[in-house]
Length: 231
Length: 231
DNA sequence: ACAGGCTGTTAGGCTAGCCTAAGTCTCAAA
DNA sequence: TTTGAGACTTAGGCTAGCCTAACAGCCTGT
Image (cartoon, rainbow over all chains, first blue to last red; front, side, top):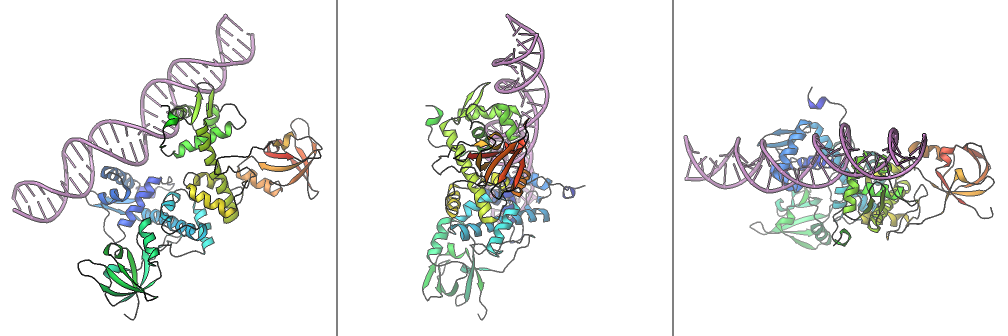
């Protein structure tokens, strides 16, 4: 009679939803999410995280190895993916249908994702034609809870001389997103990596229109690219 | 240095927003909202209301006369109208743009109204062409906080022989709304009051298409009508 | 005028979620 | 092998918001 066998789940609180999302993101490369990383991501003190982790492992949403970190259980992963789906559908909808700028959607979606019903998300997805990527290029989980896992490489780590397509911008900061949009660095754009300065210096790329951009290391780490074949 | 002079207001909690809305609705005919009416409307116990009323009058949102009831201060009224605007814009948007049925929008809007930003409400209102009434015919407060106050009469209280236009359905119950829609009793419809049975019996009306409806007292109290001139 | 019933308030307790302060564990470097 | 820094947890306390039980005020009927 462990926790996962209880059928009628109480609805998750807003707070729990946020913790699950954080754990999902922090473990997306595999491994454990640490207390302090979660605390930082959610802007709470570490003991708050310890306390919540205790509760969440009791309800079977996470696996907690004390002093090591946490991972999502299948049930927790399902819940996290549902939240991420909501978030990304909302971002897409606000952008396409209500004229939001891709730099502004995140904050709004962050609030709404806790309040929308599955039905509403379904209607929005439908109105958008079941989009597969959000405005930042991140894959949208399906209603069934499946998410595409692409092998992307950060622009900062691409080989000089290679050709890539900017696939996803792994950031939600409004100012950075506005800057990137100004520079024409949005998902789908084709980039030729023509140079990179030493000592974590900027990467220099050429866009499809022949113009070049100098992309500092900080930003180049956020730009996730798909290598183009033939290179 | 009373509460209303403090400039930087903390954001209202979800709970506070709900209390203010209740007080607004309960005092819309003038007078005081009582503890027990608020408790019933929000499905909480009366002492919870007493406690909240204490806090709200300390923050200057309501005026509390112990053992009498409460009224909104101008500041409380402003906040309540903002919530009502959000609710009604959301209902309108969900109905027009996302194919929601007028019986289902209320529950969804009830959740969303606490999460949407003013900006989003503005975008939705804009997309709808600044609607003045929600799908139930209720007036939508302006962004400036003004609301139309029409003199409507319940269908149950109309004079036999008079002619009215159904203006607003003062109810949010899904089943009742579905039933009314089936009967063609939706805002804007023209009704001739042709008879009423005694002892709070049903009202009999004729629609524009010549068909008649027998409307029981319970429903007839929810149908708010505008008398048509010339009778 | 006052008793009883209803409504409202106070008292006291609970949970979720947050905090700070004070331990406890781990691991790497000496 | 020991030790210390840093990460984690436990202890204890706070607020918001809810509850039930007990008390207080109001008002109507006699």
